[in-house]
Amino acid sequence: MQSAVAKWDGTVLLQEVDVLLRGASLGVSAVALLLSFRIPDRRVRMLTWGLISAASAFVMRTNLFTWSNEVLLLLRVLSVAGVACFWMLARLLFDDSFKLKSWHNLVFVIALGPILITAVADDPKVAASLRWVLNLSATALTAYVLCIIADRRDDLIESRRKFRLLLLGGGSALVLSVLLMRGVGGWLETFVAESVAFLALKLTLLYHLMTLRNDLLSVPNARAAPTIPDPDGDRLIDAMVREKVYHRTGLTIADLAAHLAIPEYRLRETINRRLGYRNFNDFLNDWRLKEAQDRLSDPSLAAVPILTIALDLGYGSIGPFNRAFKARFDTTPSEFRQSALS
Image (cartoon, rainbow, N blue to C red; front, side):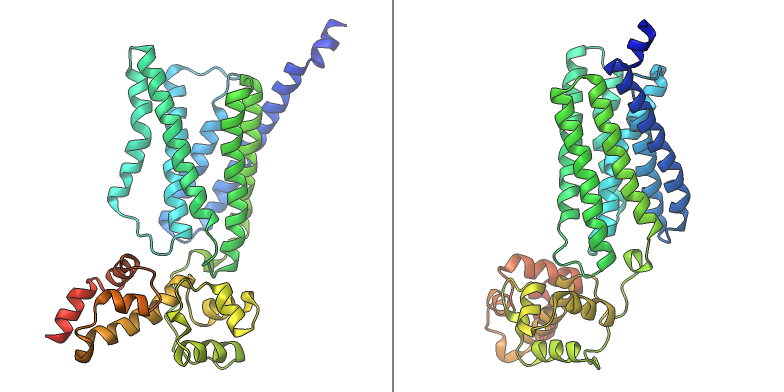
């Protein structure tokens, strides 16, 4: 009779649920790891492996299993390294202007520093303070990544736009479960909530890997000539060439679609599939910067301030114009003007 009561005890039931969820999460990790070999980009493939390993290590950190101090430290290091992997992976997947450089590895150093110091700290108060620093920094970096993922307004790739929503949901569930349950729940309830959140995040990643399309990770197509033999393309080019609609400050793809009186999804497809752009801002900048080159090279406009030119072309201030010009031509507008007019 006592064994029957214990079987239905809430704590025992939660433990069983937690073990099942963690087992399912590790199973999803194994399948996702196998599917990740199909990712063509080596950097994205390696970061995906790192994220899967980190998520698995986090799932294995539970009071239901007994680990040695060395193994527990390794699991903690892998778990925290996953935050840095998540940041790099999100930038590579969703930020077309991002270029991975060697100094970006400092993110791993910053993320792992507190946990390594905690491992050798003799003072419990110092160790506790470092854990708070670690949790806050990891949470802040994860929140920043979720903001990057959530910004899908200018994304022209439909498969990537859908993946943003899925990944945002899984990542937000994880962050909320960790923050809320660690604040109000017991250790077992916390582990169960984290297990559910990680399972959701891994299922999201698994869905992405199973439906992976080349346009998500491929190099952008070469810019096509602005002549498209279709009504949507003709209207678009006419608005850009004759009306110079790109001069409008704060122009969005929704505004442009409304101006052209065509559905937004068709305009996205026209700019992406037929013109080879992955991001609406890149499309706008190509038109704006081409005209900027012409104006800065014109001797009759030598006395016109660069700020005036930037504002006329649709930029809200001089800063975004300078950054876009520098990124595209590897020189500043003033240096370009000086060289062109000399």
